[in-house]
Length: 447
Image 1 (cartoon, rainbow, N blue to C red):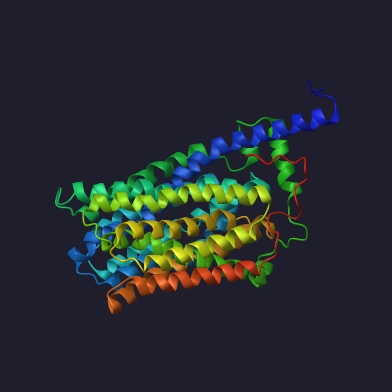
Image 2: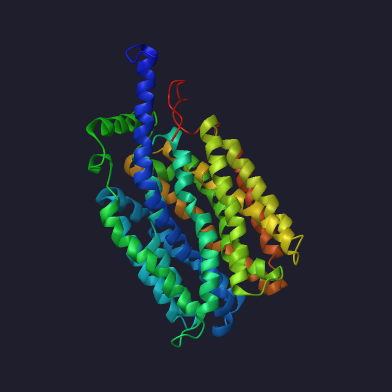
């Protein structure tokens, strides 16, 4: 039996205590944050299912839909940085609650859309309401987890995107099929109303579920709090500049924003058009479309965890990120070669969706390696807001090209090209960006 008083025994006991502490934090925070992100992403992209009937009811063109789907990100872009700075100052508990309740109300109001102007306005306001949620949670996780654990924690949070697809696809399809012309509302109107309800409930629950930081966590012992605080303090980037001016003038931050823009070109190209692509492959029933749409997201769920775990285990980010981008580009490009073949479309779209979603948890280990404090709040928000402008560009390009060519193929080729550019930009990054130094051999690596 190992002597706990020996150096080896003491190191083992410390490692076990540290792993147990981080496991406790993960179980208390990640399930709730994950559910919140599922609700957030569902409210952001359910317009892709509403499109199946809404365009016909309201006589909207593909260009009107593409612009409306994308204009969300203009409001998101404008208010992202101030929202994240406010979260850092007033605390995550109140600010995340405010964000969720506001976007739930705006999302539900989308059922009143009658004209393109109303559609554009409500999508813009939804972006304003949701601004700060995603980068706020990314920032919030940096308060708790050091860089060597952050890839896995990011993945457990961001897996909410494919889960929203797995759950939201069949759910949206069922709502579209079961709630048509009930109480005088069309199925797409019921879709907006019903899927806004979880966000409203979760927004209120946030006030009771999220501590603002380590010190506010009543479920941690003093020894556990000190351990977490010491690990975060030890990982603060050496020589990191805390000023907002430095962040805005930092070329590396702008490069990260460009990489993320390329990633988001792929993500929102898939999110807003996946139901349409499945329909084009020969599936007509709304519920069946929802069920088939879940398949690429289910594949992505597994891929995200495996890629993030591999990246953390090897403490390597650059090649994991670049290869995921190349896989996504190959999948989306290949999908244009098999229009009308459902089986091949599902395979290629699954590869594309898995690749682009696997980029996200690995990517978000980078910003905290060069920013801390208020600068991290602003920098993470700036990268996210600039990157998410792709959510405006991608559906707008695909919608416009579909009006012109009567096919989504040309738009998907543009998306694939953007992902290749993202891979090239990634390989120009420094080889190590997880933390200021490699973890020691005795540092525990399990979540």
